[in-house]
Image (cartoon, rainbow, N blue to C red; front, side, top):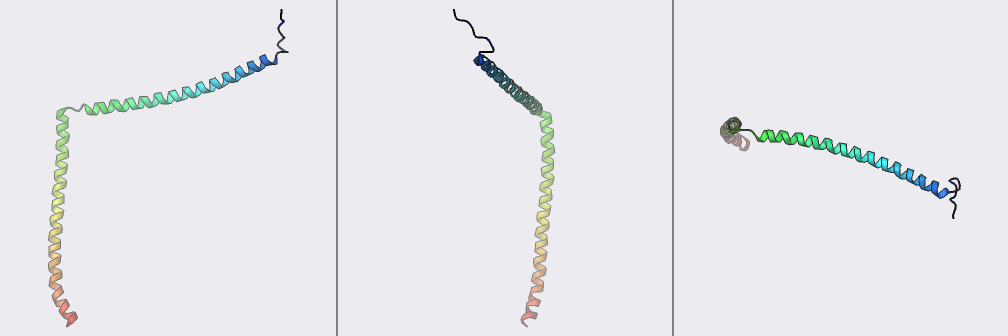
Length: 115
């Protein structure tokens, strides 16, 4: 019958135990990294879920609220349309008046220059 070597003589056994310890330490490090990654992803998921709930609430605006919003936006566009038309007509009138003044002064000025 074969006798087992003593632990002090079996350096291969100690090496294997050391290797197992290194693997366990590496596994622990990887598990901590995975836990951190998982907690980050859970936080992002919760934030996304909160945004989705908010968008769902906004999408559930009833018809009366939608009409009120539409009327308010419509009034704003009408005001802007009126203001744009006023500015356009003011520009046309100013250009016409300026054209008359330039033409009125240009004939005597040209005669004076060439004269």
